[in-house]
Image 1 (cartoon, rainbow, N blue to C red):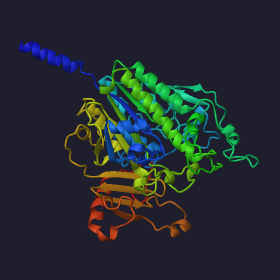
Image 2 (spheres, rainbow, N blue to C red; image 1 turned 120 degrees about the vertical axis):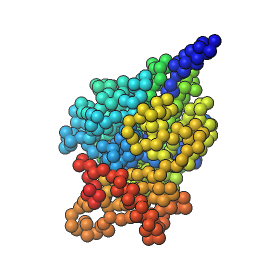
Image 3 (cartoon, rainbow, N blue to C red; image 1 turned 135 degrees about the vertical axis):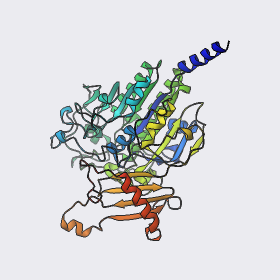
Image 4 (tube, rainbow, N blue to C red; image 1 turned 180 degrees about the vertical axis):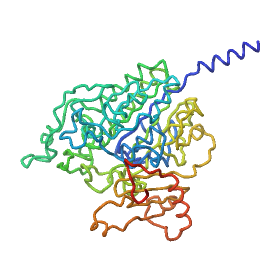
Length: 503
């Protein structure tokens, strides 16, 4: 009888299903764009439901301040001082090409062949792996393309440049392109002098009939249905709400006339829109609608208690006041929740992400965590939740699976970020202290350097000053010295992404 009992226990253990993982990565979305973080205008009922039925993080940090390096941190589990990709950079063989919208001219600087990403670690555990959206870690045929790094299936964009248009002429379906019924990307990016900026018909040439975000969402749903009988990792890096501001009319109409919304005429490579704020809001609500379809499908398949849902964003929203970059107005929507600056900076507005995790029956519904987490933590966290604790490759991440499952967990000692662009930046979060260093690349001619203050250091108490308005560096030299020592220990020089002052 004892042997039979042990056999039954073993059988149940072997047959226990590993959790599916639906990992949704928004693009340039701020926490304040979501209802569950206080948004009052933009409707996000399905994401809000995920937060109500799971755990919401209030101190989730992105991998970096812009797209590609943030995704590299997420996928590799290495923070920016160790990760290979540290800035947005076009692949060397694509530089100088006349038109980025051709398959042979696209792709970002690729990760090396030996870079280990999340799907490569999950596959040996029996997971089906699919990616749907924007890649950005290596162009077609390079060492960085997704099918060479553990994905069984890929659908969407490879290149970030092509992804600036929601009506492209093609998308990638695994290792080949499929043609879409959309006109070529307009040669001009702004309205003509004789076109009335207040009339929708003036913008007709900037639209198409096949909206990429819809097509990508549909393929994600098909992947989930096709793999319902085995554990799957569904990575969904949507391009919403990254510019260009484009959305089908049926979604746009929900917000037209709800607030003052002057037209954006376009220019400098960005497409115009006659109702840019409405378009931004509608893009997010339409994304939420597709997430709702995925939640419904998982329930229909009977997989609700076997599926972990994650929602985060790759970096902070575009900063600026009324009609900023490409017609965005994230100040109007309070996208960064009042935090300083936005995308491209290591101030809080540039590197704070929403963080929502739902696992029915495992994570306490309506719970909130103030734990400081970063994108490097996702690899060890997901692997632990998948039952593979201890099998994680070397990462800088710390699993926060105990926090998700309601257990007490020690706080992390520090969180490090660096970004060689926008003058060169470093940041370190240590407890409630945050040190920001800027002007670290040493670039520019003698005249420009004469105007520059050189490397600068600012210290903030995030608990007391979440908007980073008061630099208290002069009052705490001993804390700065300690934090700079940690910064120095975390930065490994990169020949491809140099930081002159540091290297």
